[in-house]
Image 1: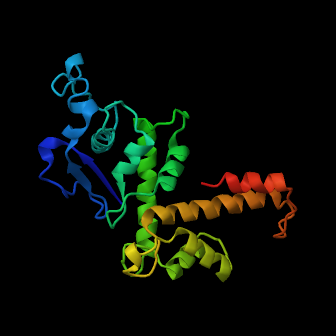
Image 2: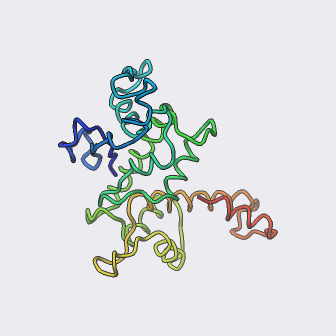
Length: 233
């Protein structure tokens, strides 16, 4: 997973690594093309030179503060779902899919503002870092994606004893199809791996809440069933 963002004066450092975690890189492109930053408000005193540099909050990690401001292309002080999607990149440089980004937003948008502030961003960043460690651990062949047998091992290690048919369904649901029908067989990228694991966890917890006698069977009304399914990320 990478964060990529932009600043015109650093555009020549396109793949410059700034973090001790090998799979995290900080890509810098060109922010001056963003109208609201370079030209849209220049006559109103919000142009490039008129923006005073805002320091990080007391005790904040300067590196995270720098990344937060890089992701927040509009300089609004809060990250939107599309800014977050533009910033989060898998190991193969594909963007995180929108459903995963929305899931992350919902998990960390504590004040339900629809955006991510700096403190919320710090929590989200730590969460992604933890998942990167998990992903690397189970990506045994170092392919940068998770195959079916690796997914089965990961879910088993988390305590989910799923049947082969369910594991196959999960793999089919979250695997990325080869581009144009060519390339390696479908496998699960980092973003989809996180979402698959979160969904299995959420569904299992929802089931356990109604399986009061712990026999692995539940009786659900149609309404209860729909609520569980539709609440999944």
